[in-house]
Image 1: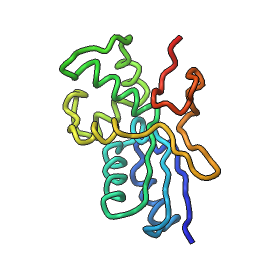
Image 2 (image 1 turned 30 degrees about the horizontal axis):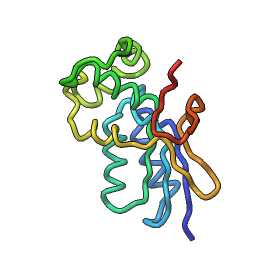
Image 3 (image 1 turned 90 degrees about the vertical axis):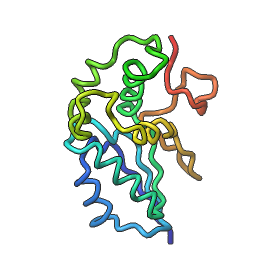
Length: 160
């Protein structure tokens, strides 16, 4: 029988995530693990969390990660600071991000600057969906965007 697991807000705690999966959940390759975002910031090993998620997917586990607000902010800060097209017209989030855990994330990647994070991590994060629809549930990090006529559109931000 297939089991489904939902895990939220890992926040850079790779060892805790590994212990939970490997010692408590002990999933089969048919089981499904849904991760509800916030893999980075605060804890000591954001990079390790992302590496572990990618590893589980690579070896055939059914792992379905969602976008969390911390990943969204990192990507927006990256776009402001590092993208060739330059700032995207939002106020500067970087200081806030650094305060709420970004420094720990940079440290876990062994970098001092957001632009130095290896591109495959940014690609992984940028491709995360905002929700999953299951038979009896809709899973999202912090809710759906009811500022939109269709809250299942891919946009994560309210305008106005």
